[in-house]
Length: 202
Image 1 (cartoon, rainbow, N blue to C red):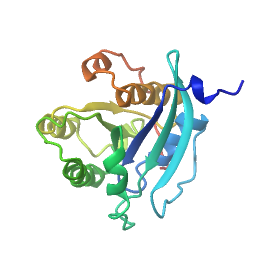
Image 2: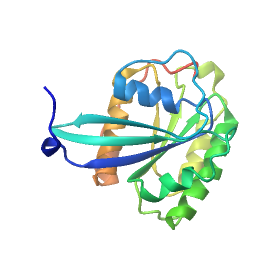
Image 3: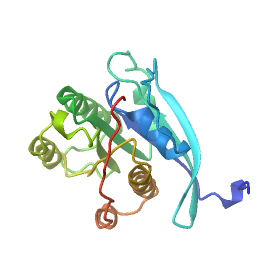
Image 4: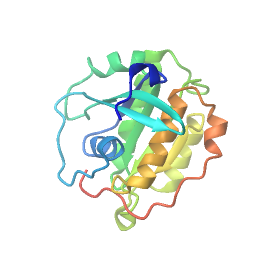
């Protein structure tokens, strides 16, 4: 049954930030289309995906802005999305240490454009570590991630698999709630399913 505009809560804008090949597009495709992209698809510039999602008993019209990584010069595009986003999601690849370093660069840029403080940003920010199933290839120690979280006011953090539909849905449902104003403390209390697999090609 097709939903009418009157049934929608409101439109939410969520920006997804991370280096190329960390799995941003794959995660969004899994969440919105319930399918896993096996072949890596390069984004030459920022892309937009929109979907009507149901979280609990509420419907949301969510626009996700999927930014390109550093191999593409999008400095003039990304900041435009930063300024009107309701939530920022930073994604890194747990098998690629440089991808977390890239997050540090873009996180500072995001705070600057939104005029936010690093110690208390007062804005919905989420960090996601992708490719959780590739434990043997993990090159980003948990201690290093925890240090980054502690230095940046402990944003919500999840380790996920883009192959795992159930976990991706649960995490992104939490993100939608966060973008819609649910307090961080409430969301931190939500247990997340144990991941069994993670995206290996994104």
